Image (cartoon, rainbow, N blue to C red; front, side):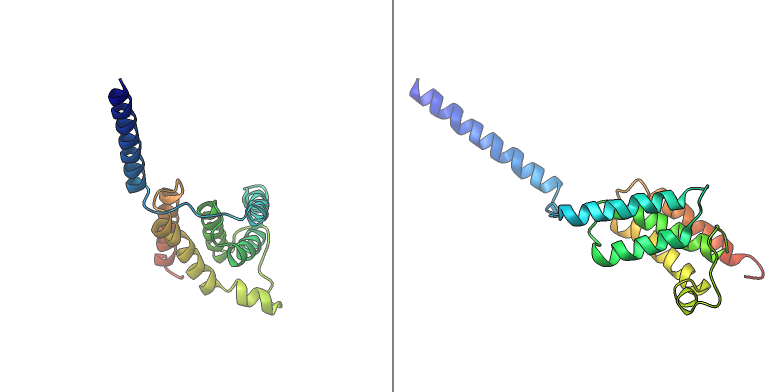
Length: 159
């Protein structure tokens, strides 16, 4: 009887050990330790950016301001893929002179941050980063569509 109990415990430990090894192989990258305060602040910035990105507001400069702040302070934000998509498309839309917030040609800051060439480069970089860094993201297909839209826009005569 003691031998069968010992054998059952041994088998259980062996099986549990095997299961944990298989799980570790499926997810070889360790979980990122996230700072709850930084995560909450980044989530707030994303929420504000999402509202600014809506078709009703089209406040793309505000989106980029919130993104710049978050990306600089907390690039490991758990929803950075979504933020990259919103920022990428906002950059593209601003480069096309879309949106309700216009670039002020008298403002040195606006002319540096929102120059057409920089906006296009940023849009491509942000959308490409989703594809490269977050291949499992639900925003990958949208990022590809955005990149294609940018390429088509650049191919138009007069651009």
